[in-house]
Image (cartoon, rainbow over all chains, first blue to last red; front, top):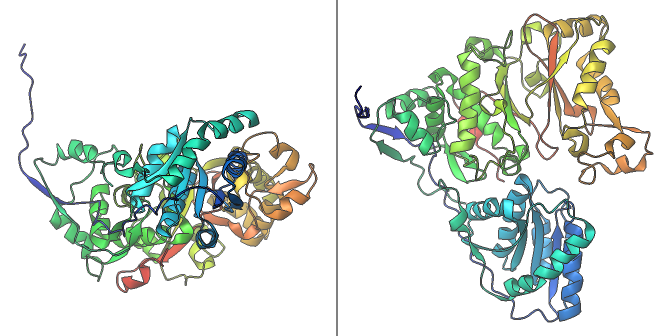
Length: 198
Length: 362
């Protein structure tokens, strides 16, 4: 028996039209300037109404208000599977910074990432709350929307099944990070997580 | 967004037709089944069926944002194995999917197994060889199989909606390979789908709808519309379907023999809608038992009822479409929606005047 592997040599060169189509140039988005500090700032908390996010955002809000004297207001999207639409301009007008979420499933991650990039485009520093299972999707969606960096807090997945006290504990353990992100230039590079074709 | 380079890139590969399968899979261009290499000659043959420049873009395709140019769509039609004459149908379907009402941004990354059903109506259906009769949604008809496949490949390759990074479908599903059929207009005593949606009968059209694979409705016994439709109502309103909590539209695929029983009793499509709106329901008590309870997006009046009240799984009866489909036998089915954030969209099948197919701004 022959023990050499048989390889099929390509008989020709194929030239094909790429089925991916031309790249549409997205106007790149820079991260909005960071807040100097949180003292007395107006913070908006934009919920997409998914389970537990309202409690998380409310807990962040009271903690930040307690510690920094921030004024807070809450806003809610009508549906997690669509973009915030006119809410972006409305909230951006009133807020110094935004915290939004939750990006813990497919459609809601895509839309909340786009919302986050839209706020940054308006010059409002914004933090997206996502989970470990959907961080990658959040990043590549942000990249598709033109952002090279995005401010995110990544919670363990799953989030929606947590009990109330666990949600509060998550908020307490990550609120300092939230404050750091709003007052820092960090943001995560969206490119490291992008799909190869992006 | 501006589209700088509308020219679709050419890619040189060290491959032949056989090894192209592996290359296409590695590049993320394939669905796992064999594909046809989109050489310039084959792409040109597709483009020759429409009177429009190859660089015409129907719109930037979410979520990846690349331009859905006719040339790029043609490359996917070749990949899928389409004959050139089906290209205008693919183009119309892509145009429909790009409508903001369809909500590709939300639909493509979802964990739901949503697939894009494409229904072909009008004279082109028969003229181009689409099947709306026996086994219409099954294998064996190249027009159905490759048109549906081309649409999926466009969403994947131009839109970037590929698994596992962007398409986050938890389990996936067979309808994601291809999901296209013609309506069996000959077997229908009623207005065909496209005519109901505002087209002249003679204007061929494609309608796309984002939903599950079909759920079966078998009835070999009933001699009345109610007998058949109560089974349809039960299947449609199953609490595992997103409709119950997220609203959305519903497509009833009625087989010719069920159609006959219902029409013989003097029922119109409107009567079917009325019946289903009334009967495809779950009590608030049952809806609270689990499922998506707690995450629902309901019209405000839903919460004004008591626990015994039965709530519909569509917002209004207009959200129910009826398509006659299939051959002999008494097996109908229904397509339950992904969510109410996406609406079905129709476009005319055109070979000229394709500017009309360019998507409205998002």
